[in-house]
Length: 315
Ligand SMILES: [Zn+2]
Image 1 (cartoon, rainbow, N blue to C red):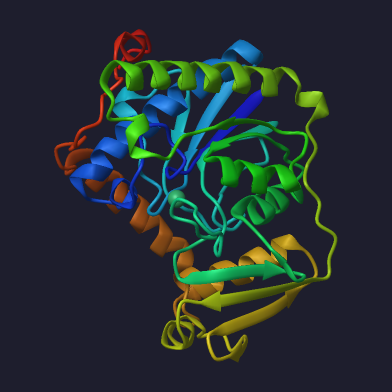
Image 2 (cartoon, rainbow, N blue to C red):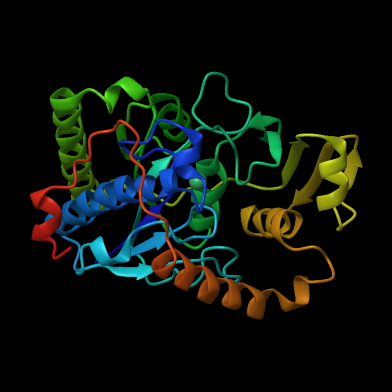
């Protein structure tokens, strides 16, 4: 059984502020340590649950956040973004997907770094319902026959994901600074939290028969609100229907709607034909940069629970 772990970063244990998710900063370098720890526990859980092969798909920002030299070496690692299927790349071999460190959708009040797909949108609806990333990603993966069976993140993010994936197992992660800067107490919280990641991931894999590909019936109407009109104009090179900061489009299914979303977000019309070689070059560039030119980590006041477990995995 081939289990894929899709990793975002905002919902990691240890992370409490936005800068820890921002590529290239020393706080992000600390955030990468946190994420790698979380992912290692999920890898361990996947194998305990019966996976015979595990692939980690890194997804946040440029797609190079996990510290590969500290990642459980039993797992394959795939960094960066792809064009077929859109964004995810080769996925047909997976039997189950586990999502680590997710965040709440755009427009969510009192949430940690809420956004849907990319920070340019302040609100995001499909068929008049506000969505989180799971509504889109799990449904796009669902049309490929792939079920999502696990996610971790802050409570509101987990609630939103549960609405569309009621069969999935989940772990709630504290986003308050106090959880991570309180010495012994924080170390205990991290150890328990990550042990929970391991156990819950294992349970999800063991229960694979109860996991379903998410199918959202079309036709679908996408309605996005950009942060401002200028931004909407800049990104909408595709002549999607635009009213002020609002950009809308229709699709027969999620595969088509998601491709249009990626066109709008990442590929201006004139460079779209070259997206294959461009994403390949970006994977190479950011792969090297994030590995060999990373800053020193700044954990600020946080306890660093990178202990013996990591060494066990050959880190
Ligand atoms: Zn992210």
